[in-house]
Length: 332
Ligand code: HEM
Image (cartoon, rainbow, N blue to C red):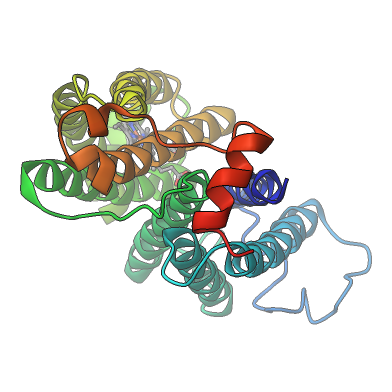
């Protein structure tokens, strides 16, 4: 019962955070980042703005939902501390989730207070966007790891060693790089929207093109190379004895191909807002699958070979199993 509740809290926090991230992309794409002026945490200098504009409502909704996500992460941290012994990965991952949720809020506050929002075309806005995107991925990764770890009754230990670790860490790094180039492409699309692909390409190659327009050209190439890398990584884990590792490897392979297809559609349609949100959602899900694959493939059970490694992770399936396993791993 307790295990099921913790899983629910972990999954709800992850889903809520995903919604906040997608809404954040909508704030950027709809030019609503200055909806509360250069005020944070107040909105236009007021706690509850009177006669708010659409932009204010969009920005305020982002702030309120991110506040709720922060509360959920705190609840998750308390729940994992109550349920698992010291040193269990679920406790550590929930702690990292809170850390990255706080840094996410601070970067968001910085964007508002330094006015790196709406129509700001300054060069350092790109650095802010890149930092925001990297932190978002780290936050999602920590939450995904928490959701994965709370399902493990055997205290999971991740061992970063060997060829598997090199493959997976480079894949995580290349996804992060793709995310940064994507964030720059998204900034270019927001600041200099084009009605058609042809118009967009013409503007990108004009001599006087803004830096973001010149750089957005990189994203499809970097992303395609990274997708190939992900496919190779996924293929190398498809024959693992552990069923969960194989499933996650298949998800990474499928996700990489789907994401490239979505990217092409996004480009052909000149990145309309709904397509931007779908593309970001698919990127986040792909990242979560890759984090899951990394955890699963590098966890101590999966690293060992033979019959022992072929056993699926014990899960909180039945109350009988729960009773047997909880005495060994969770606090009583
Ligand atoms: C592994 C594959 C890919 C990943 C992980 C990825 C990821 C991303 C991310 C994270 C963003 C930023 C979204 C935002 O901040 O709102 C983005 C933007 C973008 N991507 Fe990709 N992408 C991939 C492949 C592609 C490909 C192959 C293309 C084109 C052929 C493409 C076209 C675009 C465009 C046009 C944008 C800017 C508009 C927007 O925000 O959606 N992407 N991508």
